[in-house]
Image (cartoon, rainbow, N blue to C red; front, side, top):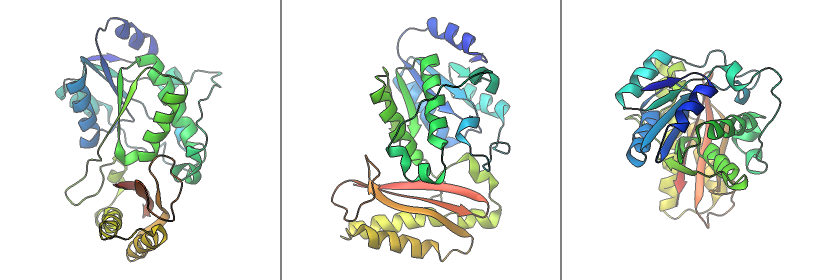
Length: 277
């Protein structure tokens, strides 16, 4: 595996490549969810590139940028084991040099859910992902369904800016008890870890009730909220049942829908979602 730590090194390596390039952008602290994306990228492309960069511009001033879990040596060992071809690990100064002041922003779809709770978050995401796409020039880029809104925003950016690549979204990878894998799960103490299963239980409840014929989205949201509120450690940021493409909240589920939520367990904010289609 080759390691590029500067944009110039990455671009030099890119010029030497032939055939398709699969790209997995990450913030590191890799888990099986990330590795499922790497495996798919390897299966579908001649060359696989994985980036590790904890992007400061997508964190709010009171969020966990400084404490976000990092273990680059372990990450590289995992990527080596997965036969990754290139790891791109730029520094913050490399990605945002002095005087940097250009931004990529997708409007509309970013106003809801995560965008409403975390102002400026998606502006940071789309800017860094656009930069990575221009540096790596992938044929395909791979994202997880756990960050469903992020995937939709990036698809919209790619379409609007006529970027020449395919966005591949793969299913959420879960722990045995249903908790969606996330680097932030490491923040949870044992009691909080137990409580965190309430997110998936609420999503399963929504799916079960929908399969039973319930199409009143307001009723489903309230059932999910009532279940979550039974967990003393849980504090709801939002519970949503929305159109899968626009993320506009539905009153009646008469089209494919996304049930999603953001819940704080102690000090840890977790997100998850499930499709109703």
